[in-house]
Length: 367
Ligand code: BGC
Image 1: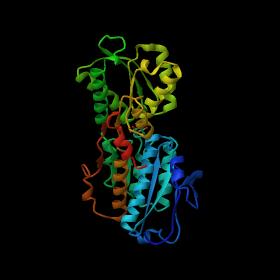
Image 2 (image 1 turned 180 degrees about the vertical axis):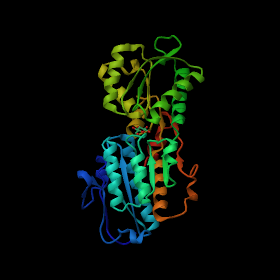
Image 3 (image 1 turned 60 degrees about the horizontal axis):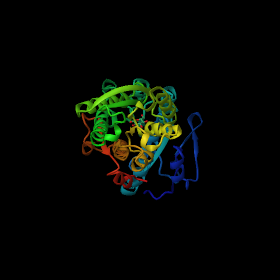
Image 4 (image 1 turned 90 degrees about the vertical axis):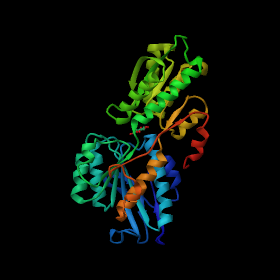
């Protein structure tokens, strides 16, 4: 630590607010959005980059469960890194509220504010041009995360990076879990026809994880020897409340023929469970529900056996990797220890979670 008193305030949701409730001061930044970093006592300033660095972050939607949990981990790792290195790490986090033009303005503001590196959770993964142009013009490196831009865009300048995971892996693991459940538990085949009748709750149209997860999940079940039949699907934009509404519609359309709900993330799986609970069906009558992410609430549902499993999207690993990369870029250090793929990508592996091993993931949480 540089010896100065550090106060940090992050407005990324209640959990984080609680964590930083010792904060004494807040700044109101660009466009009325509250940002979270204040350093008192002279640690700031790019004139002494080794003692103090500044990281700007824009998230596509601060209410997204996975992203907000990842941000909490990012802040926890930043605190640890400060203790290890003695370098003050100032983090300004902005919520783009699902608007790409708001996010572009936020990046402009972060550059004006002197950020050493900018981390962007793109609103529209097909529209990073304005951000890339701004960053290149001002020579500020950008780490994109979670919402993957196309390779051609990432190649447009040397100081652009991506931290995330390989979407297809999560689809394969979800399909394996569903197939294993069907092949080992006859009660899941409610009508006894030997075919797994399923519906899909999809994330945002156009998001790499939505398209790829669904495709691989279904093809893996088939490759594992399970005959499947798709009854229907609905787009629920990663969102629990939307998934509850969509699931209620699917249930009124297909009744008890639904044997499996494949959700592209845990929040939508939980929305499906909310609809099942509201329907008055007993738990024995529910279809199997399976998610992806291993969020705190998702893991809880696996432990309670409301979900047959989930696929762990390593938010701690991604947060840690992004923090280390941001740190090295800000302090001008060598990136060789970070094992970047093609000099640009860091991808963390997924993992399968069932009620047999869920406890280790719950313990492993950085809560
Ligand atoms: C996560 C979702 C999240 C989405 C946001 C995905 O990787 O699995 O839970 O809503 O990213 O971009």
